[in-house]
Length: 189
Image (cartoon, rainbow, N blue to C red):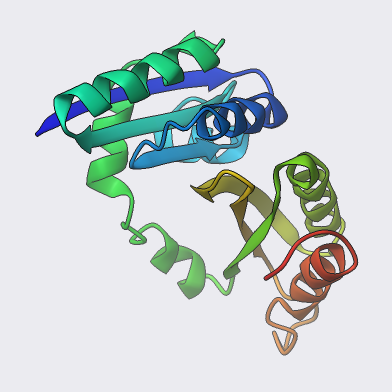
């Protein structure tokens, strides 16, 4: 079994999405192809000035070599330390940092939205702008989690303080905003 890893930094999230699209459209299907926006790149990888793309493939050595040749050809971006892939493997399911937020009364929630490649950059901007406009929002971010030849999934995360002292809303305004941006546009949730 062969394995190969790559990490790249893109100037914009849209540029990273386009690289992912081109990789898959050429027939390469790495086991992991995840793109993080600058907010998540800073939080997860200490890379706040770039949009981190993590690539990992495991398969027959010839297939891995061919896949990574396509990845290298399509990722016209800054190569990053391969240790970021190991960091992702070790921490990808760790949510322990959320407990202090919950204890402080901060609402944290996520939603995964799928759309075609052409719609993803606009959908990304629309949802983050909408979440940023919700009173009490402290942070809103996204990463591309699952990618296919015709589109991908964007995983949005937000954190905020509910309006008022009673905390009754519990993130409802934010949910209404992302729902409006996805159902009024090209996304599905």
